[in-house]
Image (tube, rainbow over all chains, first blue to last red; front, side):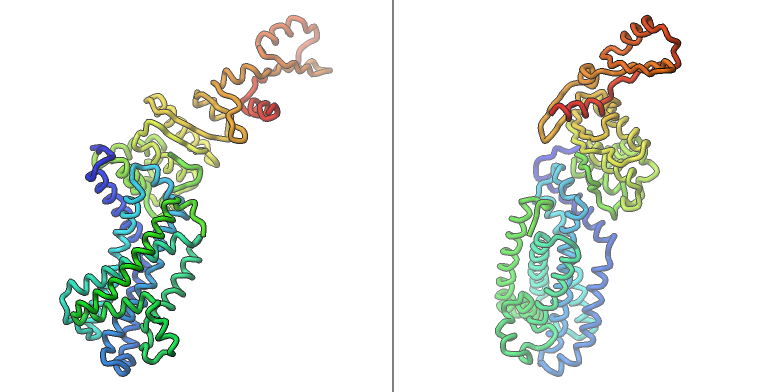
Length: 256
Length: 202
């Protein structure tokens, strides 16, 4: 059967088609996701003895810190999902179909968001099961925190994809960015042990707010979760809006 | 639309590509499966539907791209040099599929630098230079203004006579030549000659 191209039903079907297709693309290249799932497992095990000795909430710091480090590395997955449309020249082909730019972006965002949530849920699950992370708060609070952080990464990765010209540029930016954001957030070393300037600069890192939010969600502190969530939400809105503005010019025409 | 450069996902198969573009154009289930079979058969891709795009040859990728453009039977088709760098089999299959779509009522805008294939399309031609159309008409109309050539080999000399009506000129020459003929050839103007003449005149 052939459907009329307008209306919410047709739009939903196109988004479903795009989502299925983008999930297929993700399944065909799972190496990045597998890597970013293995990295936190190893790092959590390695850092736990040190962080539990240095901090009263060392286990929570260990798991949430490594979650933030590994999930910022997944910015590369987010960026690549958009950048590949440029390098494969498929975006302009998609634009000739009845699918709107919003539908195309939604179809791309849903699978990537699922990948981010899956990766972070796996790290939390490992943290609880193997590292002894205590989650005393309601599950929805933790889920909200994971969702906010995933949306922030999605928006930031999309913006990055509109700024770079090649996969190697994206890799350099995401790798160095992930290390800088995570280190400044205290993911590798407690902030109290870092130089004063680093402690002052820490709130400039989205990872700092992510770790605060995730630790608060794990212990069931609603106010402590929502405040950093609002900061991250603002970052996501600004990054997402800027990415959308740049995408309106068309992926093929994008230049830094 | 089929852009000049291959614009397909390398990691998916021909069938998966066609499912995506067919689905975005509103085709589903049985009609989608039937359209995929029809277009891949027409473009001689039947044996490659479950092969990934990255594993196809350049000509097969071109046909897969054309299949994505033809799949949903658009009323208007824009094809930018769809036969650039392809093998004769691909060119034949593409042109046959396009002739069929044109016969079914589709309007086709087709750009190419390989002019002989335009004669096979029996289309209205527009010659563009520097972004402007400098001539328009059927191949026959455009070529009628260009002279052909009648060549007579008389042994000790070769006679080359430009002629707009080569048959009449040849008939006239044969009645006036008294020397024995070693050979006769008639060259009709080609679309390449037309383009060259228009380019020189512009």
